[in-house]
Image 1 (cartoon, rainbow, N blue to C red):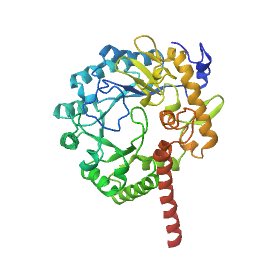
Image 2 (cartoon, rainbow, N blue to C red; image 1 turned 120 degrees about the horizontal axis):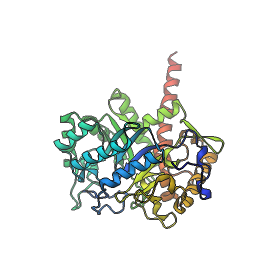
Image 3 (cartoon, rainbow, N blue to C red; image 1 turned 120 degrees about the vertical axis):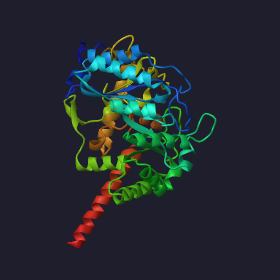
Image 4 (tube, one colour; image 1 turned 60 degrees about the vertical axis):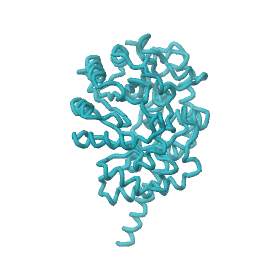
Length: 402
């Protein structure tokens, strides 16, 4: 096995000094870039392509991890970056078996699928249950909010089809979580938004926002950040009032970060807060044709002359460690690390973040070495502050009662 820390060029130097040793946590597999719907805030290019990942590519994606010593005790394969369920269930039966043959028994392999749920039926539910697949449903809440942006290729709403898919999951007892994209329109209706998920049996909800990245060049949250704070405050109150029956991911993470700083790793003789998006090969994204990238998963498939389209290599031509000695990585890694160091110097939240999201730095600020972004404020700082303010208010109230 090629050893980290035996570089061909300067950009790959020093990886042997990562402690703990670098391991891949998520293997993000693009079964196909195609999506059967056409959300107007989607960042993915090429979602008209019907290319599909071959089983040989699936095998090689896992085999390269094993050969490079990057597969640790546990690994999650995430099927994403397109609509996975446009492929038939038999594809996943074969793909799951191929991955297990390459990685088991040394690595405990689990699977996660992020889907728009429009194609879920009983056959899909059976596959999810048989393999213990973690299912994430992309849905934006009530129909009038959801159908503003998540439409068919002919412009019709998709909400009814999503509800049918969710009903199928609930009828078969398939656990699932939801991810919603929060836009400016959502901010005015926190109660209707919250109630829809609570009424549909969702227990964990992630609230993304329409980020400016890739094919989507602007965010509707720009200029509405005070409204976003009020929205989060209301969601927190509603979650508390529900007795925790619906947990908001960002608020739960805010509480976790207040309770304890992030785990740390050592690099270049210093301790750094753990952030998988800035660690080489912690997240590995493999396209349908076998091209691979690392760092932010959203880099996959994006055009960039400066960074060679973020493609570090192809599993059919070589391994992941080998790619760290290539020209593409030599351009990408130093800029990402400069961004980490800049955040460490400038941001009081650094211990709770570890350097931000490189893809958002690039598409919001035009520079991987930038610091604060709208993504930072919306996904980390603001939820952190909302939870902290609530805790401080409760402490003050308790002091008055005593």
